[in-house]
Length: 402
Image (cartoon, rainbow, N blue to C red):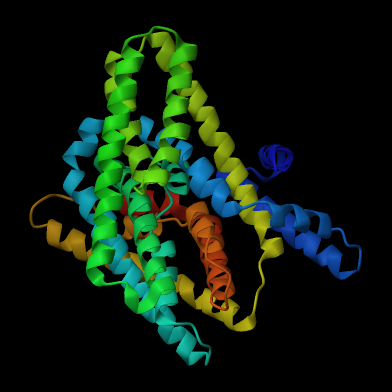
């Protein structure tokens, strides 16, 4: 995958000239389709790649491998003071927004499958709503980095995408438990699991971040300090998963502490520069690899006509749910605080779905409901990255002018 990522990145830079995140995914999608077409002629050219992808556990690679590093890297460069000013907006959008969107998408998806005379249990429709509702901080950060939005709006969007990712994973796990155990799971047990995952992840991230901050403050060697942050991400994320709290939220909180307190009081100028270079490289490399994986994973996805139709219908459903989930809280909060012109429309269109949604879909246990959900997820994610991603900057600039 690293070789393909490098080749696709080179080709995109030399010929296609799309933003790197979008370019490598579009090229990898074209590559996958080309393999499928050649395979129809009996060349068998796609079979080795298919076997390789079957051996790759996308869920394990992202959710238990790359995600912690990507979220930590994204949080490193967010100013904690700016984030604190917007904490209530970000908190409400990241929690209520995900919950509202999950219910809206789940309900409308159930209606679509009933209209198609195809069975998909309501709880699995909610699962699709849960995995497709959180916006992807990886994609959002890559697209909006150079758009030039007002600072307050950029902080709201970036902060929401960082935190609603962790919330979305928790909601997904809670609904999945309900789907697998049925009537044995009560609403109170789901609420308890949600509270433990979210509050535990935030508290654990704060403790872990402070502990590593104290260790950084006691040394003045950039190699050791970079290794400490790397250990925080790899070891800290593994422990979070082991004790049953939200690893994504823990990494966001730890990244904020290291990126602010650690950067200001525990690092020399040389260490700050080296640390930034290291995590920027990690961020760019993992982004590229993930979006190549999204593209070529299409080779192992089983598509059906009803699922394809439902996936196409899911595109406006997901956009409508995103609009509702941000319009309601922003309309209420406008009574108490100011929002930039066009905030609802900007939040809606820049709410990109990406690798995290795909990983959650692929993590579903085998069964008749799994393939339709994976198909719908792929269709929405491809539209989100290829269409919304290519136009998000222009749309955001247009509506930001009022």
